[in-house]
Amino acid sequence: MKDKILPSLVLCIICAVVCGLLVGAYELTYVDTTGVMTDELTKGCDSIYADTEFEILKDENGEVVTFDGVTTVIVPTGDEKVCVFEVMADGYSKNGIHVLVGVNEDLTVAGVYFLSCGETPGVGTKTQDKGYLAKYEGITADEIDKIDNLTGATYSSKGFKKAVKCAIECYEQNKEAIFNE
Image (spheres, rainbow, N blue to C red):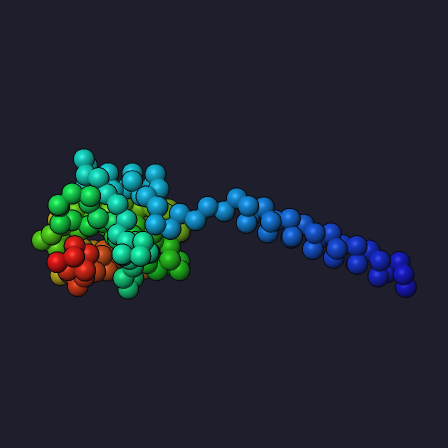
C-alpha cells in the first residue's frame, strides 16, 4: 500500500513546489505597462501620425481613461485634435484583433496599426496586409461597411471593421471629454 501512495504523494509535492516557484518568478518579473507609452505603442503612433508626439490620456487622478470598447486613448501632446485608439475586437478568435486606429478631427481614419493578430495564420491574418489596411485610410464610419470582406476571412474582416468603427464612434461621442472642451 505504501509503495502505491508514496510516489503519488511525492509527485504532488514536487508539482506544488514548482507551481509556487513559477508564481513567485512571475510576481517578481511582471511589469505593468498600463498607462505607459511602450515602444510598440510609440511605433504604432509614429506609423499613423509621423512627427507627432503622443501621450496616454489620463484623468486628474493619473488613472488611464477608457471608454466602452477602447482600451487606451492616446492623444497628441500639442494642439492637434487627432487621437489614436487602442482597440481589441473579436474576429474568428476572441480578442484576436488588437489594433491602434488613428482618427482625424473630421472623423476619418488616419491609419491602422496592428499590435497583435490572433486570427488564423494565412487566412484571418490577411487583415494585416498593407493593401487591405490602405482601404480604410480616409474613410468614415458610414463607409466601412462598403469595404468588401476578405474571402475566407469573413469573421476577421468583420471584427476588424468593428474595431475601426468603434474608434471613430468613440472619438465622435467623447471628443469633449478627450480634449477637455
